[in-house]
Image 1 (cartoon, rainbow, N blue to C red):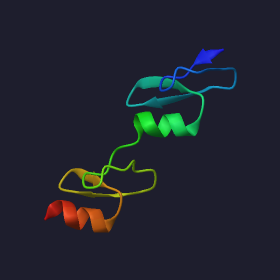
Image 2: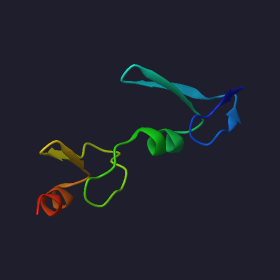
Image 3: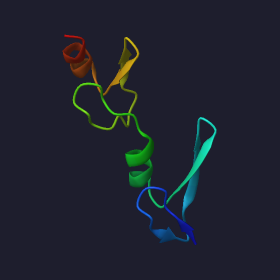
Image 4: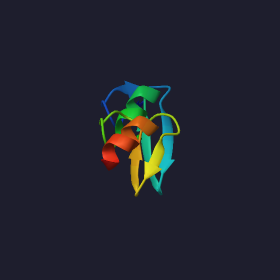
Length: 70
C-alpha cells in the first residue's frame, strides 16, 4: 500500500500526480485538491475549475477578481 501525501492514509488504490516535476501520491481527489489546487486570491477557496487570472493572481471567478483588484 502507498501512503497519501495529504492525509497519510495507506490505500491500495492510491494514484500519483506529477506537477511541475514533483510527484505526489494520493488516496482521493479530495486530498489532491487540498494539497495542489491554487487558492483564490480574494476569498481563499480552492480553485478547482478554470478560474481566472489577473495581474498574476489566480481567482475562482470574475467577481473575486474584481474584488481582489479593488
